[in-house]
Image (cartoon, rainbow, N blue to C red):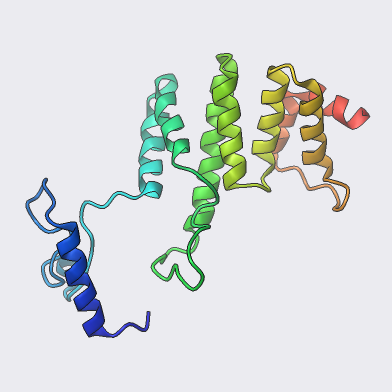
Length: 207
């Protein structure tokens, strides 16, 4: 990262004071480099933050717990979606993000958001909860604006709300494009959604 070693030590010392002590362990949230768990594993000094829970990690935990609880897990899944406000890591400053070692993480998180939103939408529509279903699809579209599944889910929500014209327009635009680009190839999962709402697509293509 092209940062002087002395600068790293000084900045981490300041950050250690800011974060203070982990109440669960009685140890600093940022241990000295030679005393961290990472240092013990690597055999050399290494900094790490203990007890840190960030949105992406919390999202994954809520998803795992929600899916494990079955039908009773819907509150956990909706809480996970409440953490999403756009594309994963889309607001990283220019030139920043060097700390993001796993460059595939944004993609995996995007897929996870789409999957969770689709599950929430499916469950909510089955229960007649159109508000939660629409919120889930709109959240997924924020995270993955070019994905087909959230938009087809949104069409299904609109249809359930009795907004047939809106539903048909969304479906047609999703499958046929906006006129400036050729139609997108329908993915397998998107095809499954289309098959469940065949009337919607047939009507849209006929209009």
